[in-house]
Image (cartoon, rainbow, N blue to C red):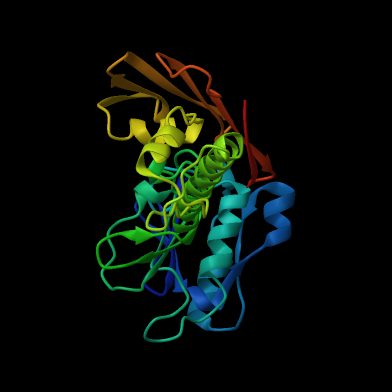
Length: 306
């Protein structure tokens, strides 16, 4: 017998024998659950009734013995594991969905790509596995879709964690901009301190970054030779022609064409985490070329340059 496709259709748990086409269980999903002990001890899926009812009990008593390796999810293509079946059961079985916008998902899929388009804004779906490179947001060319809940916005399935990842990237850019401003202010202060005996003061021109009053000629002098950094190079390259290079589905290299020649940005990973970004090729002299991203668990905790 089998394999057996186990899925939720509307408000029912439906188990179908793919081999024969027979429906072996079709009962309200709110009135059944799975035998946790049997699943963990023998990897056997067995459904039991959480309340009575002749039609339900008849189906429960005659259900086949389904080993986890002989089970399939709603796609009919992917076998459940013990953990993915537990997730399926916890999300779908043993409770009644409230009418008019419940907390129950309208679909459970293997990953983001397996989700089908929603029909109602606000409906929920659940992806069992992550897809793409973790913590590589769209701003860095990433397409990471985490496991977990998604909400339909009328045109796309949206994950809160994707929004968080992209916001982390924007926050990093904002911090780097502040760091660049601090570097520039320190450079201006140092130059003024060195030349303060010859600086001509004018009342109508004020440098907003440092608070010092300087002439246009002196301003040009102060800005000349302010050092480029890893982040200023990274931002400047965004306006240059580039080519993306992938290893499988993972973005690993970006090749920029610049006036001086070619600059290569290499993205390095440990598992699915982006752990460093390295510039090579015709880079400006004297800048740090490696940006290292440090994690505690799955959380990005610090960034260092070398």
